[in-house]
Image (cartoon, rainbow, N blue to C red; front, side, top):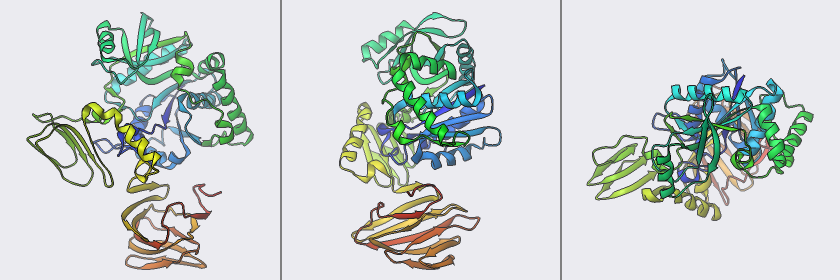
Length: 477
């Protein structure tokens, strides 16, 4: 039994403005239209033995993750389960809870294959071979990490120093923090240092025993969470929520610090699988072939007298003239221009925006919801205009607003509207008005997407002016 465990919680602050708190890095689409999470699901399905994949993610990302899973089309062959965290507590907590779930379902000898949801692997065959070798070592009671064969003296990754050869893989001497450039060059020349990919393979019983020995502060909280979930009777569900009052006692620590650096039973499987952690815009730009002047682009761009420029544009033509060594990321509501040597500092922009409570760190102009999505088309004092799209069969919550009224105009599809005591069907080119203080609900009873324009007016138009009465997605008290 080999159960892929997908960790999907990273914020990806260095990839702002595409990655944001409400729609983070795992949901970023690559040039081929697939998100990193979708690619991870497809990769996990190649090696899953026993017919199950487990995803550990934040509760807020559950429905978006389910959408990506549906796109993968693997539900018929593989059962998919979710462990939902109430908030982030780093990888040690996530892996401890996943190990308890796998042990409960399949026994202590079942192996976990831990995969970050926001990495890219281009050579699927080499990936599968590395996983097969790691599984052999995991069966021997070892905890296995994957070491990426370095292609350059990289200062943005941690390293693994490998020692003696094992039957497959190598023994681990130590884990090394991100080095300076001179040290990274020495590691490359030595030949026994590998990039730490943050991927792991171990038996459920092994990792739990090791946690009890080396990280009891993690193990004991995990046990308490599991007992609470067991008492609530939710362990048989495919979607399990970890209780917040118990989960908050987890230390905020990575699996590397909590366990891998403390244990002596660690092995590494070297791999050359076309791996990238997509950790910055510099890494993203290198995924695309450049022209003769090393200019690259995603979306529509024109380069004149420009060199070493990367442009990513969602909606507009971007032209550069007489510039060099720039990265330009253009989205509907934010523009980033950064020197390639400073891409790691983009996270400082996000920190500033968060400190200012600016919407641009949290949400895109288009915001995805369990029922569909909305896009803010225009806003100003006392008004906001949205395009709303509702999936077939989906509905928004029964809700009320204190400070705003809404005018709904159906563009296409059929809307089922609850407006106070009335329930009605509203078709294309028809509209209805929702006064402030009136309970209302919007649903799509049809087989096609419902598209409508919402015009809000009032003294306060914030998204937090919502009182929910009923909601199929569990968003009201």
